[in-house]
Length: 426
Image 1 (cartoon, rainbow, N blue to C red):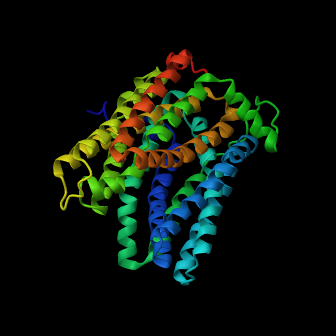
Image 2 (tube, one colour):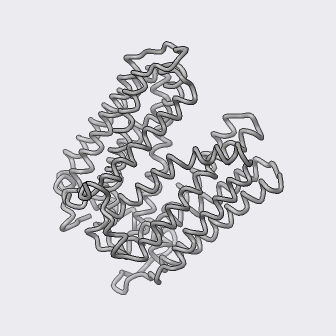
């Protein structure tokens, strides 16, 4: 059993990584409180679902716009300083969100603005934190380190929304925001305790500004293994991300309304937790390209299975919950969440191991853009298909389209299929 459970070696061999792990884990849980509370507060102020949806635009645009440039800053400067300064901005914004609640400002535009600044700081902070890890651990431990990070993120994603909603109901928005600000202090402390991490002495001359960003993109364009890892994720997220279908699944297919929607969302997160909890064998997998291909294959089939359950149940608007259909749908989403976590672990490991240190920040910036933008495009594409063919067939078609696109990409990039972590090549 210990060999099946998550490999804790990164926590044992690196005190710096251990502090980051606990600090960011606590901080991620607090961040989920704010995500839920801000959405609830905006809805409480406006009574408009559209106003809540607009919040996503204010979060996404700065993240995509600054993701690439944030990575360039990481490559040019001391990574500890970049992570620390961006963390201070994130902490200040969290405190400002709490203050507006305590002072009863009740301004939707202020909340939009604060979330936009928060997202912009995240676009710099996230590449910095991820590019730091290969400087703290041997490259052979990257799968184990990424599995541990994914475990804490999925736990936060599962427990945070429940805790956030409970705190808002019990004590109001201000308490949820304040607890997030206190939790973020753990991440700030862990970042402060890092050693200095300047660019390596053998790094090439560092360009700045737009030229630096373009250099990173040009490098990515000439490296099939890194490029294919991004394309594989886009195949999964753009063609077959089923999140937008969950409300309809609860309302008109499986019954139970919002409660069923919450159960489906939790099932997806539980899949990620289980995959990372039993990630011990991942450290012995060397063919990371094949692992990504098979994981995304499992994702595509799981999403298609979820759609098949909805097609089989039909749009009946049941008065009660269809337990059998709900169980099958949850099993499909547990599989989807698990295979998505496995794909993320090995894609991150490829990026951290194969990319040269002086380009890791910029390539992590591209990773942030892909991870942030892919699911949003997926919501749009799968939602459009649902309006054309129905929710069930949209998931089936999305899963099959992902499967076909993925294997065409794998066939066209044989080097990715042969990728070996023992001799990583970009």
